[in-house]
Image (cartoon, rainbow, N blue to C red; front, side, top):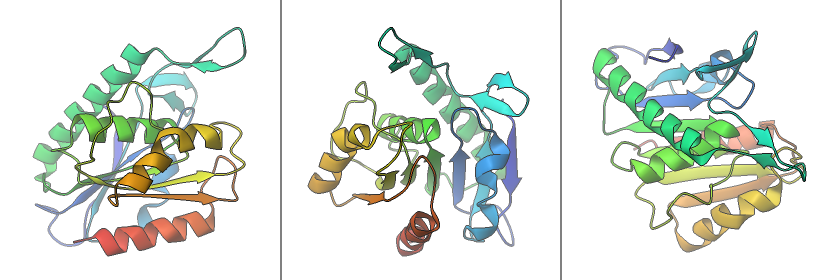
Amino acid sequence: MLEYKIRPAEGDVKHKPTLFLIHGYGSNAEDLFSFAPHLPSTHTIISLQAPLSLGYGSYAWYPLGVDASGEVTTNVDDAWSVVDLLIENINFLIEKYVLNPQDISLLGFSQGAILSWALAFKYPEKVRRIIALSGLIHDSIPLGKPEFIAYAAHGIDDSVIQIERARKHILPLSQKYPEIEYYEFNDGHTVSQENFTALMQWISKTNL
């Protein structure tokens, strides 16, 4: 099982909604867990840590390579195997802490956002909401009408995952389906205060 950090919901944790945090490449469970004090006290917050160690305090969900042209490459099978690993851990933690299986949300950054999209489209019965920050929807994900709701945001000046890659699939989805809300900010590969305020407002209005 993956390592994780947990902040229980206020009161009795049983049957409460849960927000799983999925960090980016080269980070760790502590990173997004810094959001925990600002996230709803009605939710259990669980920050998962990726299994692949890159060095002290640095982890990845799946390896990245670079091709001859300098483009970042991914082994698609590696990435999809992590999606299954994530759902296995989510199911384990739902059972362990008696969480509400009908109210599971994901918050992913960068590589974690890519995995959040993949997980939500592959296991829509498991995921009610996703928050996908500075990520993209991989070409290998079969797209259809989403059975979940999503807040997605990207920095216009992102030099790690260029804005065009986010616009390729996320923008058309948001234009076609009201379940997907997509925003762009004058940021790089980061989460600005403006972005964080907007996602907190989205969590509040969708916390039904």
